[in-house]
Image 1 (cartoon, one colour):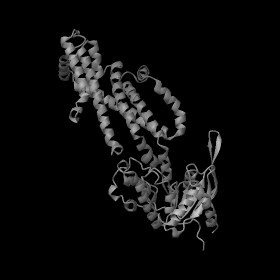
Image 2 (spheres, each protein chain N blue to C red):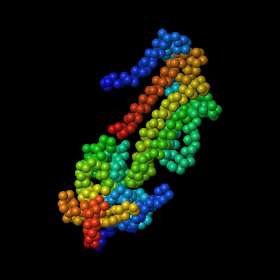
Image 3 (cartoon, rainbow over the protein chains, first blue to last red):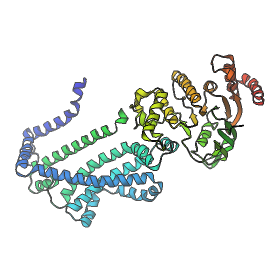
Image 4 (cartoon, rainbow over the protein chains, first blue to last red):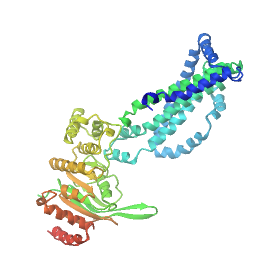
Length: 252
Length: 268
């Protein structure tokens, strides 16, 4: 197969999927109330855009995800670096953080809504927590697993502590940190929708889904699902591109 | 007037504790290298030659005996001792320039002087054209040249080499041997080379310490007289090489004859 064709490969299955969906909706025996056609969903998208400020809802969700990602990511990065570089702290905090890892994310929702309320604060607390975990784990592991030969080199070159972090530890852990940040971005996005669905009603894609469920607008629900997936995919692609740029030395 | 020896290793013994037992890695090592001397340590794997280098570097200070550099005991790594590892150990996220400049982080020189030093040492190893390349873009020989530049950029009086050419192909190795020889002798550097390549040791060193394992100890110290002239086809070069190989137990017959030879040389 030529390279010209290869770039279409990832599109084949999604296109077939949507085609199958539409065919099923039109010619199958699916109940249109449960499986609206693509046209219906598209029509809903236009109506939402015009009458319900769809863009505003999307931006509200993105903003929430962004703030949570920022708070949780920064906290995870800082704590991960400190723990990874200080064996004593690793001993002290390691077990607790390991337990924290075992707790399903959504199990925090009841607790956080008690502590922070169901409004914006509670939502952001939940999203931050979601972003915190993967960044913390990956930064910590990345820094703790710096090859011994590089630690030795830092000793031979009589690096100061700051230089050791700046020139050796941080860049060595960067690929791992990026893996964490990329996961955190997706976690934050998923948690945003979760917070909007399960906590107080507010502008956002999750809020629209609530309405779709309550008013039995199946096309609205499906539209939101497609939007969630699409935006998540875009976020992921953006993170991958950024990573490739910042880690040029790996492929240079 | 007698000049103080540059490097003195006095009665050094080192034990490692592994799995409940103790392994004697080095036993009563006595060795000196005068200023400007090129000393080679040869021996089979496990004879403790790399361990000895780590002690001279100051990476490990848990041993018996004393190691003096310019009369001062070694307490920690220092910029007076440049080091080249077997693998180039360049930081992959820094360019060639960045890697060499990294060795100057603790130097008190000004920025301009540092830049000059880096440029000068890249020129010394012939890699000026690759100043902005990343290590992954270099061949093994080029990467090792960068590592040599990094080890020398502080102008250290001592250069420690741990099988620096061991991972390179034969042709590159011969070329880099010539370069090393030129750089070390031009710079008046005191060099300690750990190698298991006897040919390399005879070609580069002024003196060769042959080490035996279990426990790591010095079996013989052979001077490489200037008359050997470092021409690999010289009969005397070949004879010395065979002597060292014999001491390492590679050729039985020559080994015994060689041992007698060594006694005479050491006595002389």
